[in-house]
Length: 525
Image (cartoon, rainbow, N blue to C red; front, top):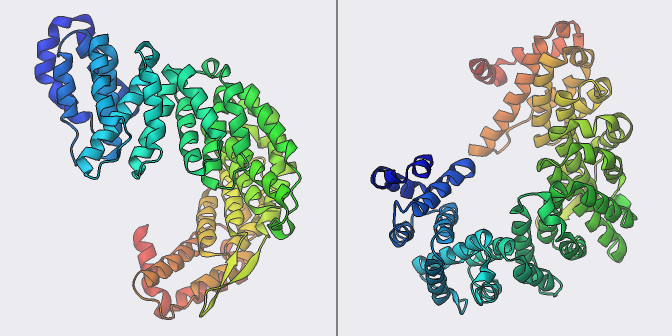
């Protein structure tokens, strides 16, 4: 690209040696970020410098669409075609749009895979083109495309539905006055099938904003439908709302953090005995869904690198969600805290001792078991299991990122209990113990007696009728416990515990059961 920029005369050499590899690369499913931007810049410069004629390059790019191209490859190919179409003359752009309308108007869904992919590519091209240029500069084009996109929301093909949503969102960037009001007005309608797609389009519009200033003027239009759908019964819709709110928070933190705090405060009354809202309590159900959306929005904003200095001010309010008894809200709050501890420990370090840790200790003790009738037998479900998993993940991350703030001695009973919990939690607890052997060995040695019973219980699990993968999984579980035992036994002072020393002796003495497993563990080291 740089060569063509400073020396257009190099066009024939670029065409001869670079064009073919670039065409191969344009449909790669691995193409993304800087590599993708560089390729788009190369194709743009090929048109600007006239190294390749537009019609020739358009033909060559279209030829790249075949049955072997992946979904991501089609999206990348569309971007390449869109960038050269936005760079060429207005006459050529009109011609491409005319060909596109011939294919798309009527919102037909072809039955043949090859034809369906052509339609998908054409939809994506119009969306990417609409992000690069204002489609209102072409008479009637924006309105026709708007009807096409909405029409494809009813398609039988999921690929075409999502391509239409993607394109509607991207086209809104270049022609905001035409497309954005359409998205917002449609969201006010009670068409459940279209809500997810419209929110997906809105998410694309938000994601494509270059900076926070560009989106500021759109907030009064965007926020009302997002607030409305915070309480949607469909979790998929609420997740999409949270993605939009999270992205907006990264772009406009001062406005959005205040708005999310207001939403939380307005919907904080949730009656949930035993973690569940009563069927007839519609207000608590709505409030729980809104609080879930708020917590998920903050989690996604943290992952999206929201300004930590501004989040720090509001985090004490959001952490209050840990005190809610409704299970889904509580779990969302735990995942929010986990994201903060992992990505931005500085925003929660001051809240750990007084606000977060007590909630984590409470959750670690929580069990909400119920019987589910499955006909010939019953199955026990523990609704608190996801919460205990999340709490343990937060503890584990605090040990790495905030060891000086976490009360590690108080965490030891939680760790001992986790060693005897469900399989997933046990395996995570095993990893924590092994990690602490090199970082916080003294705490382990002081609590080593409490680890014996849960570890021995795991090691003595019987295979029963298990065969194949089930038996292999059990053996891996037992090997994980053996790794913990061996790692602990190497700590200075560990074998001074009579209870632990006798446990190690019993295990090593049981050659019939553990000889091969111990050998396998030794071979790993």
